Length: 116
Ligand code: HEM
Image (cartoon, rainbow, N blue to C red; front, side, top):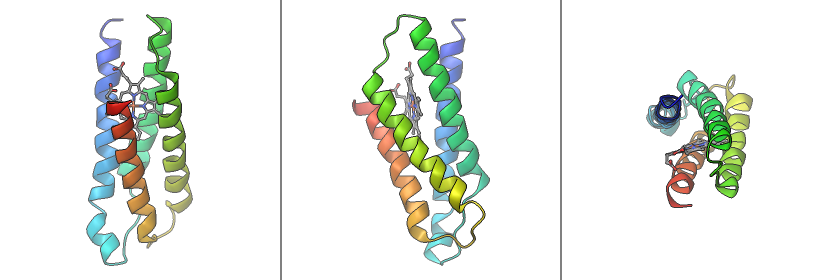
C-alpha cells in the first residue's frame, strides 16, 4: 500500500501536465480564431478528478490529515473546468475565453495546491 500514494501523486501530476499542456498547444489556434477543446484537456481533467479523490480517500484511511477547505476549493474549480470542457468539446472553433479560462482555472488550482 505504501506505493499507492506516490503512484497516485505521479498520476495527479501527469493529469495536470495533460490538462495544462492541452491548453498550451491550443493557444496559437485560439489566437487565430480556430481553437478547440482537445482530448488532452478532457483526459487531463478526468485524471485530476479520479486521482484527486483517490488521494483524499487514501489520506482519510491513513492519518486523516486532509485539508478539507483546500480540497473543497480544488474540487469546485475542477468541476467548473469539467463543465467547460464537456459543454464546449463538440464546438469548433471555440470562443477564445473558454480555453483561456480553463488554463487560468488550472493554474489557480496549482496555486491553491501549493500555497494553502
Ligand atoms: C485542475 C485540477 C488540479 C490541479 C492542477 C491539482 C494540482 C495539484 C498539485 C500541484 C499537487 C501537489 C502539491 C501538493 O501536494 O499540495 C496536488 C496535490 C493534491 N491534490 Fe490536486 N490538483 C487538482 C485537482 C484536485 C482535486 C479535484 C482533488 C480532490 C478532490 C485534489 C486533491 C489533491 C490532494 C489530496 C493532494 C495532496 C497529495 C499529497 O501530497 O498527499 N486535487 N494537486
